[in-house]
Structure formats: C-alpha cells, structure tokens
Image (cartoon, rainbow, N blue to C red; front, side, top):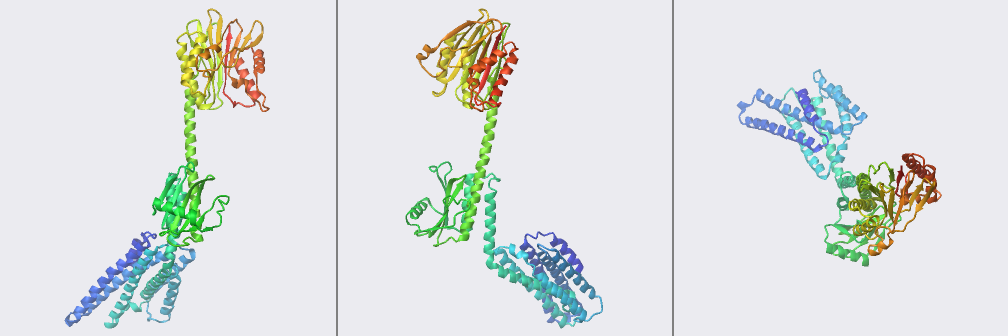
Length: 632
C-alpha cells in the first residue's frame, strides 16, 4: 500500500509546477481533508456500534483500522512528496546527498518491518535517531518562503497548520485504536511510519515558524520586486515600441508605486520650453498650480547629493509644503540629450516624507527613463534618416530621368555631356530639342542652391525649356519668356543662370544668349585658339519685370569643321584643391587646347580626370556639368 501510494503521488505531484507553491500545499490539504472526512465516518460507525455490542467484532474493528491505515498512508505519502519538492527547491549537491541518504534510511526502516525486532530496541532507536537528525537538517531548507508575497504567506500558514492538525489527528486515532482493541499491528510503534510522522510534522512546524518570521519583511520584498519590474519596464520601453509619452506614463506610475506617493505630476517639454504637456496622477490642475506657487514662495529647500550622471545640471530637491492635503514634495528634473526634457514632482501627505533610499530609487527610474526616451529619439531619427535616404534615392532616379540619355547630333556635329551632383541630387541642367531638321535648341543651366530644392527648381526649368522650344522662338524671345516663367514658378530668393543656343546646320551658324551663366568657351580650329564669349545677361528670376529685357544680348557666329564649343557650370571653374586654389578659367582653356585633336569622348574623359586630380577628390563641393560640341 505504501509503495503504491508513494509511486502514484510521486508521478502526480511531480508534474506540478514548483513556482506555484500554494497550489502544492493546497493539494495535500485537500487530500488530508478528504482522508480525515473518511476517517471520521469510520469512527462514527465505531461509536454507533458501541451502543449495539452485537455489532462489535474483530472484522469491524480490523476494517475500521485498515481503512484509517490506508487513508493515513495516502495522506502521509502525498505530504512527503510535496515536502520533498519544497526542500529540493533551488537544490545543491550537498542537499541532494542528504536527501538520498534520508530516503535510503527510510527504505531500510521499511525492510526492518519484515525482520524480527522489538520496538524501541537498539537498531530501532539508531535508525529512528538518524532519520530524525536528517529530518532536522532537511527541514531548514525553506528557500521557497522568500518567494511568497504577504497574502500567500498567510494562506500557507493556515493550510500548513491544518495539515499539522490532520497529521496529529491520525497519529492519535491510530494509537487509540491499537491500544483500545489491543491490536498486534501498531503503526505508532513502526519505525517507518513513526519517522514519516516526525518528518511531516517537523517540516510543517519549521515552515510555519519561518513564514511567521518572514511576514514583516514581505512588504519590503514585494516593494523591491515591484521596483525591479518597473525598472525593467522602463529599460525595455523602446524594445516594446513605447513612444515618449508612454515612457513618461510608465515613469510616473512606477515612481508613485515605489514611494507610495499621494499624488504626482510629470511636466514634459518636447520641443522647447514653451510647448508643455502635463501628466497628472491623483491631483488636479488647480491643486498643481497652487502647490507650484507654494514651492516658489515658501519652500524649505533640502538639497540632496547631486546626481553623479547629471552633476553639472540642476539636481533634485525635497520641499516642505503648507498645503492642506500634501505636506512634502520631491522634485526631479528629467534630462534627455543634455536638454531639460521635463520635471517630475511626487507628493506625500506626511511632512518629510521622502528618505534617501526613496530618492535614490526615483533617481534611478528618472535616469533610466531618460535613456529610454533618448534611445527612442535616436531610433526615430534613424528611421527618418533612412526614409530621407529612400526619398533622396527616388529623387536621384527622378532627376536622372530629367537629364537626357542621348543628345542631338547629325553629320555636322556630335555632342556629349557629363554631370556630377555634389549631393544625391543637384541643380545643374542641360538638354537639347530638335526644332526642325536644320535647327537644334540647346540649353545649359545652374539653379541656385544645392540638394533637393535645387533639383526641384531644375525640374521646373526643364518644363519651361520643353514648352518654349516647341514655339520656335528666337534666342532673345526664349530668354525673355523663360524669365517670366521662372518669375512665376520660383520664390524670390531663387534664380537660375542659363545659356540658350540654336544651332542652324543649314546656315552653319550658332546663335546664343547668356542669362548670367558661365561664359561660353569656344575653340577655333583654323586659328588654333580658344576664346571666352562674355556676353551680357542677368540670371533668370533676378529682375521680374520689363527691365530684364534691356540685359538680353544675342551673339551669333559661324562654325567650321574642327571647332569645339565647351559649355560648363561654375562648379568646374570654382572647384578648389586642398590649398584653396580654384581650377579657374585659364586652366580650363589650357587643358581643352591640349586635347582638341582627340575624339570627343576622350576629350571629355581627360578633362573630367584633370578636374578630379586637381581637387584631389571625386566628391565635388558643388554640382558640375560639361557639354561638349565638336563640329565636323
């Protein structure tokens, strides 16, 4: 019976989760309750039988004794298994050795039952003495007690007390039945069951005593545990995708819980000192304003040791209040990225309500909240930067589509270009348009500024060029109308420099007008000389009225085979090296003269290489563009 009960409860209770200690104790309490009810029923039958002597016989007595013995074995083994799980909670090697020794001795004592021995003889006393000694050693292992809260400890005391009562009831019942009816089998004289009685009741007694002694410290333990949980919430706030306001709410709730505050508020300044948001807890806005006024006018300052992390900043202070409800306040600043982000104020209804330990706890909460908010802001900045990069990549692709992949050419000339933006996108622009079979329009421009704004204005210039080119305007009319269009599209601080050309292959001529752009560099093959055409002209958008027309000047020349037109933006002539020297116009003309006999693509590539070599980098400070035309 003992082995069957031990095996069953070992398997059944062995599956239970040790983290739910009260459930384990509850199981043996219920087992003991059911067993006790069964025992009381049999005892009632015996009482009834005493009034009818004819009913009392050995069979009834043995039946009652056997039932009580069986119920006793079930209860003792279930309690034994649960106590084992509790003893081996956070086990060590030495503890396992003691327990194994205890179980082996218990098994030996059970085998002793089948041997011929006298109760309380030398062997009996020796084994029982060893088992009692090991019971005392094992009973001091009560580490599980520390992990119960105040309510759980009281529940455990009550349940274990009732379990002890059940054990004592069975011990008295079995002894009484054996003595009253002179039974040959007396479990109270059996070393195994006597050892189990002692083990179960001693461990229960030790448990109750330790639980009682730990009751006063339960609230402290629970508070510390709650502080750890709150600190963990603050530290994991960014991982759980909490935003700044949610982090502040966690800080406010955690701080109130840690010091058992009667009221609190947290003032947040997100962008600047003007924009504020206040989180309230157990206090109204009117009462907050009154307390703030009290603090400014009547507070008694008790400065605390400065925060080592924020030693150069404003630190926390405690204040005695003259408020009818709140008697003391603790105020702590919240810094994020060296800026005062907010201010936490905790209130208590007792004077001098904040001790040094409380202040340290709240300060650690505030520091962790600062880190979490800073991490959140950095993550948001990283997301914004990543989004900005994606937008720039899209803008780069869009701008790439605005510049022509191929330029116009015919038997009279060939044309090639190169453009490099200082940032992901730029404001340089060039394009061609075939007006008729013999006439080709060409433009090169430079928008003021850099980056996305310049690229946006460049796209507007493309629209202007494409629209006006369709009208087959003269060079001067194109420039005048382009100025009006730019004046309507761009803000007053923006302007565009441009040069507009019409190549007429029938007349072998070039007409062009310069609107504030870099002077055209022309190589005359017959004279073997280069020349800059510095015609007059204002940038588009500088004058947004009829006075602009006075500055429009048209220049015309005839080209011959071998002649080269070199168009460029100021990013080339103003390119600087490490000594601060500019590439300049003379150096540009000199390099062009060296390569005039080379193929057009080679001329372009050599000029680009010279510019990069001069600057000692391939990342220009300004956008630069080249357009080369070589006449056949």
